[in-house]
Amino acid sequence: MEVGTQHIAKLEPFLLMSKAAKGAAAAKLVQDATSAPGVFVFAELLEQPNVQELAGNEQHAPFYSLLQLFSYKTYPDYLQHKDSLPSLNEAQITKLKQLTLVSLAQDSRILPYSRLLSALEMPTIRELEDLIIDAIYLDVVRGKLDQREQQFEVEYTMGRDLEPGKLEQLLVSLQNWASTTSAVLATLDDKLTEISNRTATAKVEKEVYEKKYQATLKEVVDKQKEARNTHRPPSNGLRTEVTPAGQAELERARERERERERQRERERENKDDMDVDEPTDVKGKGRKPPLSESKLQRKRNRP
Image (tube, rainbow, N blue to C red):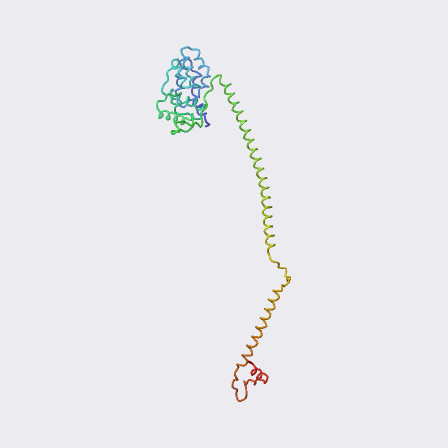
């Protein structure tokens, strides 16, 4: 069942009875409807011909005013006109306070406990919270009790009957709301367009920056390579001109090499002189040939 339709459904039995009730029976029907659990809308009952006849009867007119009170007025209104209205039982008082809570919740999303205690004449916060919790269970309001902040945070309220003459005021309020909503949507569209433009501009600037960064980085790397190539010794394989000092050093190196060669030659000759004749067999195998006369002569002449 959709929100609010259950309240209308609970009024149906009284609408059927109102077609046959007149005078005192109609007054009694008003008392029963305003006391019945779960009945919180009364506009259709108020429009019934037999009920409207109560307004022209001096004896029963207070019951018509009572039905108007429950349709679109509040508990403070009852206190103000209490003497001209029928007395209320406990169920009627509780229901009227819950309807008053609905009216207050329609005007403000945050309801301080202090305001509710005053408007509903609740003696303690505990009783006030019990009243609100019962109203939540009956689905006339929804919200959260904030005991730390001492307030009731409203999330939803049922719709109450519209008081005669208030339709024009409601239409003006709706038109103002529509204008405000349109202005907010237009502002949001402008903001979204601005953000989109800024995003596109930032993207272009980032691309330009990235290109400059890459170009600068390449330039630095090229300069570093050029600097390394400048300080590297030539490696083209061409002979360079030898200075006089270098030529002298080369000559000394050649002389040292010749001296080392002569030294190696003398060592080989000394080795040959130190060889001893090995004994030979009968057949003369393994006999070393005698030294030539020239070699013997060189040995005698050697210092």
